[in-house]
Image 1 (cartoon, rainbow, N blue to C red):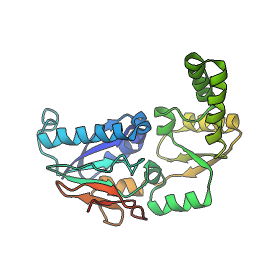
Image 2: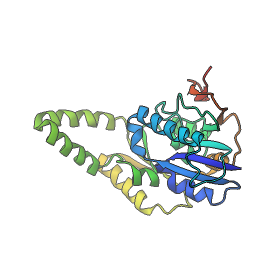
Image 3: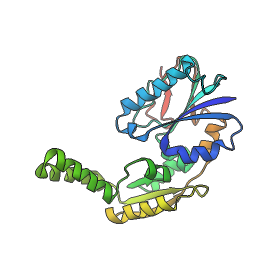
Length: 244
């Protein structure tokens, strides 16, 4: 089986680790993380990649056709809703976001969010590919606001920026023992200190991503869209479903 994976770049380390041990061939295209800030642009970027695969535009790198396209995304602010392939099976995890992949299962995700409210999640990939909440990030935002809006407006906007920070009290670092993460872990601890949050480490698990990449697609945890079918949010434990 030959699989094409379109995935968020924050998962690059974890996916790279796992595909080396996959039973099947997995070809990966990573999409930059900042598209999450504008979900409709992320949706468009993913649909453009799917359309290219449907048209066979990938043949210069992969001469054989793919058996399925995998989306390394959860619902992600509804960015996967409306996506479809005209020619391929499309496989989407029934998850809210990539934290489910990092924690190892949907059950672990739900339990951690129940037991640890007010946690902002960090991982090695998140630290490397995003502007995670930190003292440095807040200073950069303030500098941007000062340049564009002036002192008074910048102060007001920074107060608004701090409002969402107040909703959190813990910096939760998801650690995969198989991945070297000392730098990212130290960064997260520093962020927690500067933001006056607690720091807590959580041990991640490979199970969900392993099942995904090895075509163990239990319908409880993965949505399989046949050519022409479209995904939409389900507003229940399944997270996404085939659009009726």
